[in-house]
Structures are given as C-alpha cells and as structure tokens.
Length: 158
Image (cartoon, rainbow, N blue to C red):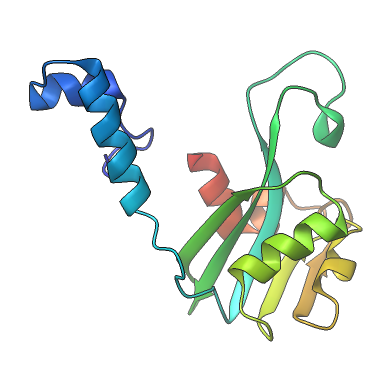
C-alpha cells in the first residue's frame, strides 16, 4: 500500500491476501487508509512551499484554473535544511484567498514562512499569520518546478 506510487486497488489486495471477496478487500483497504491519517497531527512549520494544482488528465476546453472536470487541490511541503520534509495535500473549492487561507490555517503553523508562486490570492491568504515570500514564475524566467521544487515533486507523484 505505501510502497507503490499509485497505491493498491481492492482487487490487488484481494489477490495478494487471497481473500474470498472483493467487498472484504475493499472494506479492509478503506480501514487501512482511514488509520493512516492521524487527526490532530502537528501542522507544518518553518519554511513551507505552497501551491495549487489540478488532478485530472488533459481535457478539451479552457486550460488552467478554468478547466472543467478537474479537481483543484493545494499542497504544502515543509523544507528541512533544504531537504523536503512532511507534506500536506487537500482539495480546495477555488483558488481564492478564502480557500487558500482555510488550507493554510488547517495545515501550517502561524508564523511560518510560506513560499509561493506569483498567484494574486497568495498575499491576502498569508496576511497577518505567515511570513510570505512570493516569486512570479513568469517574471523569473524559470519553470514552476525550479521555483518551487518541493511542492512540484509532490504534485508529480499525485
């Protein structure tokens, strides 16, 4: 379950554990996944890279934040001596300052330094609670994964 990039399906678990039914495997998998998340866990602190992205493959229509049929989510990765530390992901309803603030408050300790891209909602989302460092990807001349390597590494694994 934890060694694979894509996790494990109920049918795979059924085969590996030689279970009698797919329903039993699904129920076990559901319970395993629920206990792997620790409610009340410590929030990230220190230097934390934060960005938002979409989950879902290429689709015709409007690209980027206007894409239909995709799930918008935010990610945060703690930087520990320039290494990647703990990570948090969460589905957000929009890329607005209100949605980003809710994600930050739930996952990052106030007073931490939040490192973001140049998205206009980021300064308002971090105001008064976090130190904010923003770098416009377009103005930097770099790729997004070069400006924020930690969070984009996590996104590439999603």
